[in-house]
Image 1 (cartoon, rainbow, N blue to C red):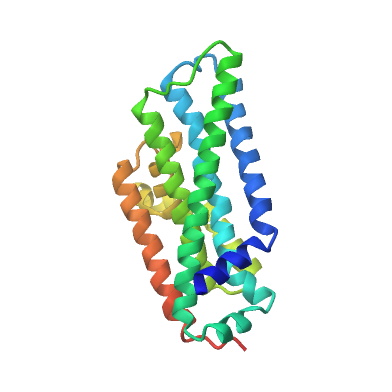
Image 2 (cartoon, rainbow, N blue to C red):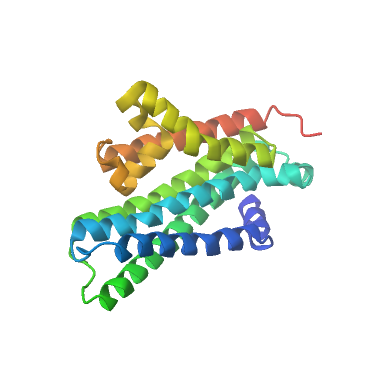
Length: 241
């Protein structure tokens, strides 16, 4: 019942649709930026770099995950949610499950948009998509998983920082500023921070020195698990009034 309630909530708000549309625009713009300025677009490595933009949609799925909990606190519907399902842990677990699947859907859609956009660009310039490249498909798969895991992490962040604007600002500041500062201070140790791990999982060009893809996926899943546990433990003790 709790899962059904979360799905109904998800289908009655506009935020997921807005973020979904923005995600496709982000992918198309990123791929266009890569393929429009390169002459060697037939190379599988260049195509992989372009398609990797599907992973960057994870920034939006992170925000979506945050709204799953912090959005309810902002609109003051969280009390009704907990009255309907007094077991708060079940509510958080349901949100984690539903939004992880939603993140997966975002990833699949972004990957499809990336492949179609790249194929159209390549066709227009007399080249074709390197569908036989295993690295290309590993990048696609990594980007999909990155989206799902960041959406789950977003739920955890929203449960820990219940102020919606504060949670979104903190998450984006971490991605845009904090990881860069940490990287400057500790060097290779920053490869194990969330966005760096997602970049390695998605094989972004900036992650060439990061951990192997499979290890990046395991480590990022570990972050998602830690945030999930923290979200449950914090939520069951918090006064929502």
